[in-house]
Image 1 (cartoon, rainbow, N blue to C red):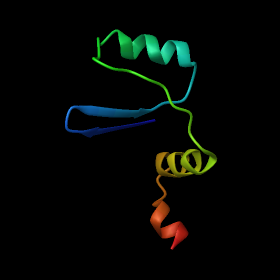
Image 2 (image 1 turned 180 degrees about the vertical axis):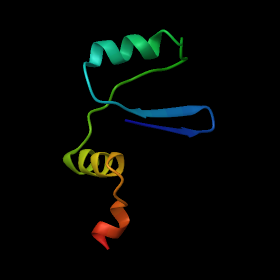
Image 3 (image 1 turned 90 degrees about the vertical axis):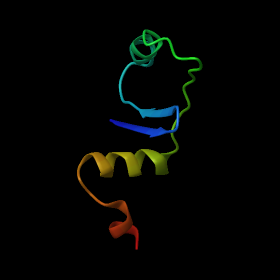
Image 4 (image 1 turned 135 degrees about the horizontal axis):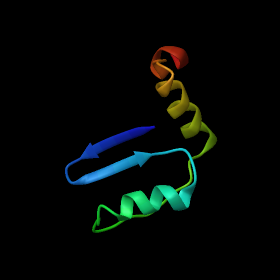
Length: 60
């Protein structure tokens, strides 16, 4: 759904089967990899961004 890069750190927001997602990521041989659940707010922000909404305009 979304990939952000800050320096050498990538943050991937993905939807689907966790085992498949982690298998794909681990195939790239990262130094470190962990999965973190999203809060309802984070899910809402991610989903609205994917559908082309600017969340800042919706909230403010």
